[in-house]
Image (cartoon, rainbow, N blue to C red; front, side, top):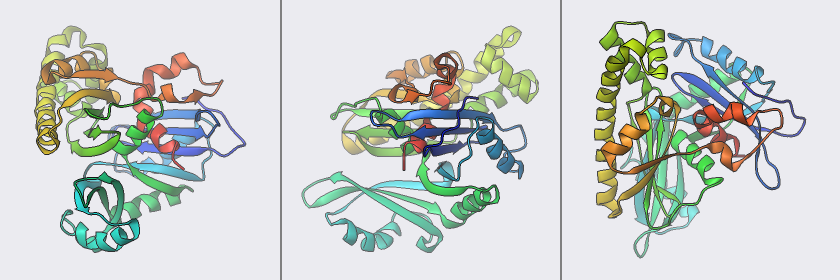
Length: 338
């Protein structure tokens, strides 16, 4: 898509979804990060689990003149479990020793089968603290490391997709400390939901509903091919506009139900309503999706661009990157990490 070769150190972020591979490279500048390259590589139908994924990753970088040695990678969905827990107050060293025992209460796997990480968020009630616990299956992480090693790449760090996206948002935005703010990343196979208060994550959930479900619903309504259904979804449907609208509404209504359950859980736990929503991901490019969700949820939804918080290399035309910016939010959030 867009790129430039640099002799200074770049950090590379890779967001590998079910529908496309998104990559970004960033150079840390004194005032703000500089985006030096980005690309979106569509995964052809049927390639999601094939060995061609490694080849596509290589092409995603080479097409923009990037030659990374190390990459920052995102994971989401069933591959990672995130829990927000409250524990007696202790220092980090004490928590490291206690976490393996605490984790057994919160994750559905044997702790010997997972890789654990945690962050102390802030104080809770007197004598307690809020902790974010993340766990990923060890064999899955190893499979990712092996995949990248085969194509000559080292995995520098692995982050949860929703948190990488939040990092990108916080580059250029501030959040009210007393309100619940939700982030929806509307992807092809799933929707990542993150709710924060006071600039800290408080709730995260992955809903297995995304743009691909709309495509399949259009196929059921029209009997057309996958590629044609994707085309109709992007253009509004033409002569099939009513069927496309019906298929879209059916999927979005299911997504709304899941959002309402998620926000209800958050409000019951923290006694703070979700007051506004920031939206990103490829599904927001389908006409009417964001407006429909806003109407049904009764909460204001704002689109945002991850490139508002970074500088853009001179050879990347702003007018060319703007239309796809929401799709590379996670990869930018990964690339700004060291």
